[in-house]
Each structure stands twice: as C-alpha cells, then as structure tokens.
Amino acid sequence: MIIPKEKIEDFIPQRPPFIMIDNLIEASAETFRSDFRILPGNIFLENDLLREFALIENIAQTSSAGLASSGLFFGKQKADGYLGGVSKLKLYELPKVNETIYTIVNLVARLENMFLLKGVNYCEDRKLMECEIKLVGI
Figure 1 (spheres, rainbow, N blue to C red):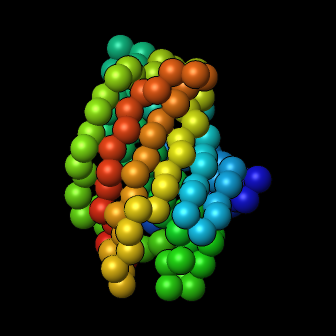
Figure 2 (figure 1 turned 120 degrees about the vertical axis):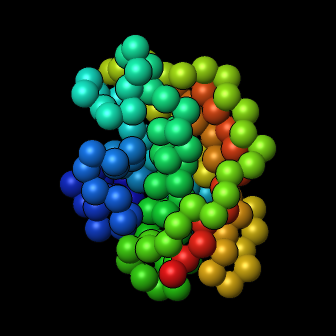
C-alpha cells in the first residue's frame, strides 16, 4: 500500500465528509489504483446507492493522491488544484452502501500544470463508470 487511509488527507485537499478514497494501493509513473468502502451515512448516498458525482470525485482524488505521491505534482506532497473538466463519461452501474470501489487511473497526457487522466471504477468484477478528467495544478 502506497498511502494508507490514515495518511490520505496529507495528499489531497479534500476533508471529511468529502473524502472519497480510502487507500492509494499503487502509484507508478502512469497508473494509480485506490479503494474506497461506501459506508452508511456517506453524504453522496441516495436510496443506498452512491451517486455518479461521487464516482467522479473518487477518480479525481485517486488522481491527485497518485500524482502527489509519485512526485509528478511539481514535487509537492499535497496536490492542490482543481478539476478542469470531465469528458467521455460512461455510467454503467451505481454501487451500493457497504460495497468497496476499486479505481484505476491512467495518465494520458501532461502539459506543464495540466493533466489528462482516464479513470475507471469497479466493484468486484463489475465496471461502474469510466471517464476522462482534466486536473489543473496550482
């Protein structure tokens, strides 16, 4: 494990109740993997399903933590910036409370402080959502 749940706040700007990543499991130069258990009381639950914008946020937080931990975010430990856009989004299924999401993010391109990343959320062997995001570092 690259970053355990107890340390994840050191690498992303979000704070509870908006943290949508538990552990950063892998961070290489181009691939980041995370997990996230959906607990009862999550602010993005509706009818015991995690909403799609939480899945996007999970991809963004996985990206931020991965970029920061791998040194790609200008050598900074915390990835401060903002989500500059979401594209090519395909939603297949929403996960349920008490399920665990596994997320894989690949770095597609980088131009100075802008990053294009492709993320996919899974639950067990089910693909939940995929999209591309643009992160802009500040």
